[in-house]
Length: 121
Image (cartoon, rainbow, N blue to C red; front, side, top):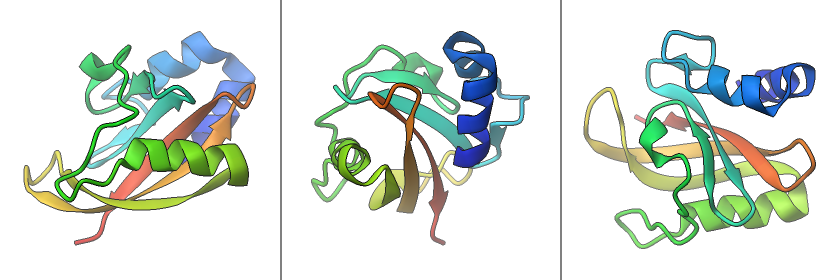
């Protein structure tokens, strides 16, 4: 889904892509799978599950174990272009805190990243 989101961004531009990423009936939100975008300062730019997070600085948000997972994804995207980060998060389908692994990849002008996570049930 991250690769598909990156291609959509390249072909359609930021404004259209971010709207598509947040369309709950669209191609970038499928049950517990959804795309989210952060800039490298930790600002949420698009979020397929919780659009109310857009504009919020979440750089130092911690999971239940104290892991700053957004910061870790950003640091990874700055140096490795793409990769995985494991953390604990509330599954929107089950409402339970579950292990999650999110894949991130640099997006656009390399000052933001697009991500999508899977729950490891």
